[in-house]
Length: 470
Image (cartoon, rainbow, N blue to C red; front, side, top):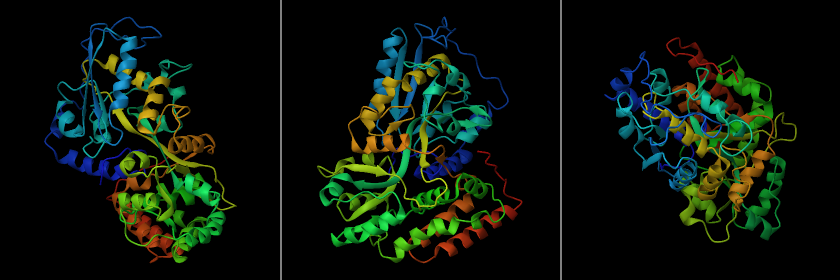
């Protein structure tokens, strides 16, 4: 599995990587180093602090230095170098020591209880487990960053962020993780092909099924997806349930409420997926994520469902003239929340509690979240930043279509938590999602089996139960 910018939220591929990282964290000797700071007071900054002002709300001291560590994955690190330029223009007498790596846990975790870096982008397969860092007191709450003035716009930093960003970085009532990227999920198509053929991108399932015969007549499969990893099809299935039934049904599912999977509308929400398979509208073969994406780029299928990391991940093989365009997951005509978009923030920065220059670390985060910084992020990565408006001036169909989707979205963001709460339920839901999309389960059978799996977890007193409140 390649390392790409899709940590982005609760349903990302990186969710699994994070869980693996968590297991590794609990087993590593470095855990003892984190334990050393549990229950102890974080060390005070040794910078002494400078004078505070609107332009310097944390009192960054001239002559100090700040060490910033960037995760150099699918997003690269050039965007962060641009943020260094932005920061240094306002603070020319502060030295920024920036480095890039993919070995975040390996290189940064052992330092956390002694002399950590000031600002760490905690991402990738080798990421530190967030809950452990928080529970051990190893990272700093950043609520004061949210209330600080935005770098180059009106209002506070919190005011400048896209919906969900603050919630995604909050745990135990405090804000710890600053997610700088923003992923949107949905159905992708080649706008150039659709223009050539005179096809209109569907917004409903009925429109898709009406278009499908025309697509097949051109020798293409109407749809393709990653059939090797069950969390890929699960995105679409859960999005359909939310759109059909509304948020509360998903909250009930996450909270293991009795018969939550059997709520009115759940089976109906999944029946179009069952029909897609039965009508042989899927490209045959058990393709993984990059294989399915390449098949789509090769013109073997008209639609693929995946997140906005797609363009970066496949940049080397995108054909000339191919216009990657994102459309929302399709809905039924009578759905309760048809406009709600599946989106979330990710690629999170943390400030270690024992960082020697926390003031400059927070100030650097202000620069990253600035209008100028987020615009550079979008330009260089072709992905949305978590700051509002980052994609407004980037001429790219992939980015602009995601930007438009967000602007036209409903009042809520689609999110699902149960797979992060319960490992066994996560695994079973992946398996059952694969079975449904392989035609070996009906929508009703899928729902019945998911309810049984949820009941098993609910009745197991050895499993600590989690509660979703929003």
